[in-house]
Picture (cartoon, helix red, strand yellow):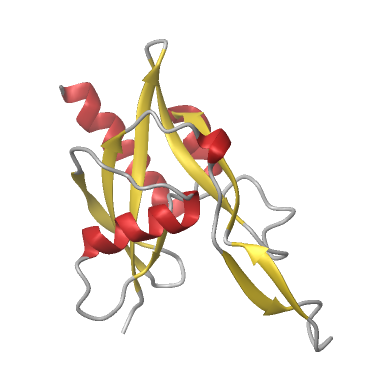
Length: 154
């Protein structure tokens, strides 16, 4: 059975330009990766957990603040590894300069016997639609395109 994740695609308009909030995964595996490595704030859901509740929890854990507003459901996507990601879009004016992520521990370097702690998210940034489509995980680019279409239709 495929893993299920839930996340939030936060957006804002800045000087008339649509921008979307993406996060860069922390830790050594993504340290030198940029294009295609960014994501919406998201995480694994527990069995039976309400998906929007999980998405809000993950947003809070990865950015250090709660997210509220009118949530628009986006079509779920399946990532390359098989994980299914459910997402919601919401408008916000969050100041990402004060964001802080939770952490995780792994053995690093591998087989060293040493545990190191890393932030789950090491960067958060607002991107234009064109920039977001380049930075985001390829499968998740569907969220960016869908939100752009929904907002253009308003």
